[in-house]
Length: 222
Image 1 (cartoon, helix red, strand yellow):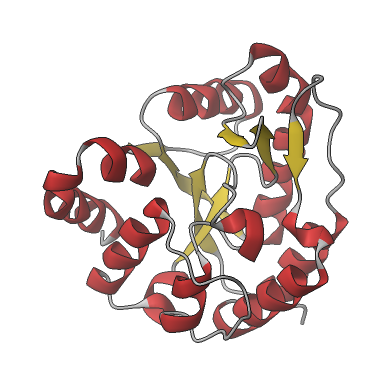
Image 2 (cartoon, one colour):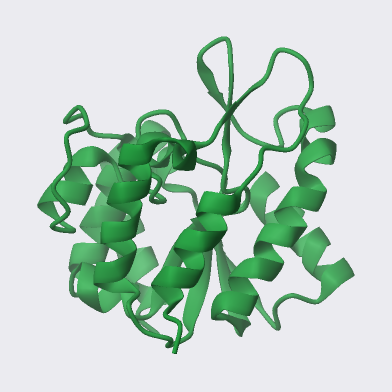
């Protein structure tokens, strides 16, 4: 039987960037041979089965995390030290990844966590403008341009093994509203829960990190 790992790798490798407004650059880590290699090793290690997973949606890849590793919320250090996938990328931490892997440790570690959940992004490709990370919803014309691409991505994740009874969105503001609106139109999930985004926590609420980790653990440990 095909594994979830094989299906995800094939999907990621097939991604073609949608047309976006002038001045915005698309980040597609899966065009890079090394990133595809690391992504394949990660997926084979944690998703080499056909068991369904609850989908957790971030926003879109950033320059120092998934934008170079191909793996949501996973920077090169987390990929090597916590996931056991050696890589030759610059050993640099990314704020969201720091939070996520502290939370994953509280839930039993990567093997336990990824046995239940699939971390992904609302838009699996990232965006920059003037070498600064850009969220898909920051520019109305960009959000409109990528919406058909996002809808197909969600559909594909579900078809590959994403559970439909519940999804979790990271970002309790614009990201949550966007998925709620899509869900009302397309009926992807029975229920959507929201948590504050790791980047927001690490940038603006860092003194409260333990409280936020506990919030994540309460919701994801159900």
